Image (tube, rainbow, N blue to C red; front, side):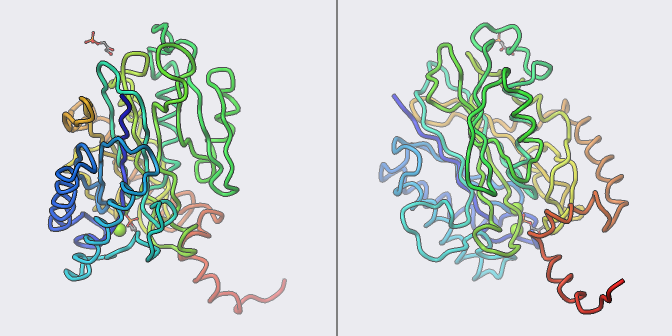
Length: 368
Ligand code: 13P
Ligand code: 13P
Ligand code: MG
Ligand code: MG
């Protein structure tokens, strides 16, 4: 039987600037989703926060892009935003960029990662939630998980994964997509996704073997707030779902890709490069210079659509070294202050508040 997992998120207001989601908002979300379970709309759910982003993880049988499920998430965010306004929380309603819901939450501000698949005899899944960065931050780890034999031993030694995986890559600037196979098109895949602000991995599919080739095994949210709002309103803090084991990378191979704190764009004012730090749930609170960017990982088993978990997967001393390295990199790069490459490239800064400053300076120039 098929199950749909929907991870839908929005920043609807936070406590102490862009730090964390208020408990009051999480309570509202939990109450509303509990009601939805009672009404038989969804099978199960969990509410999380990744820093200042409110995360709704839901399971149901309605497929992806369901008006009912998207409408439910929209109503939860709207209710939470109302409360956030009442409490004068920071950035109340930040990611709810449009007023009217017309059947699908995509394009209204919130981020969406959802996939429908046939539940296996045992179905492990990991939900990743990032704060203070953008969808392209997932390019490197998702590539490593499904295409790098130095990360994922199963690509080499497990016959059911040996033929590789299929990547669906989106060009989020030109609104087009391309399907590419690893390992045979690995260099072409990297030619695109190395440019992480433009080309993002949207989904991964199995190539051959025991899993259906038309059911995704990983999905990433790719919504860009700037494209909806036309001005800087916050970063597009992304989420992803990755299925594990039995013909797919093991949970440990999936997490291994996060042992390297790679540089992502985001951090202060969405305008800086910095290391992504994998943290336990309790540390998903961006404090130093509104960062450095964070990633949490919630592990589950799905049982007839019910969620067993979460397991706080980065709550492990084995990731202490990664966190220390992230802080070394943070310290190093922070010393650059307003200089590139700490500050984003001019091209990426177009989507921040910098152009407004450049506009003021325009008339001071003279020809040389
Ligand atoms: P088990 O033998 O404990 O199931 O582990 C297999 C595996 O995939 C470890 O990465
Ligand atoms: P968020 O995108 O998490 O709201 O952060 C915005 C920001 O400007 C942080 O400095
Ligand atoms: Mg915010
Ligand atoms: Mg955020």
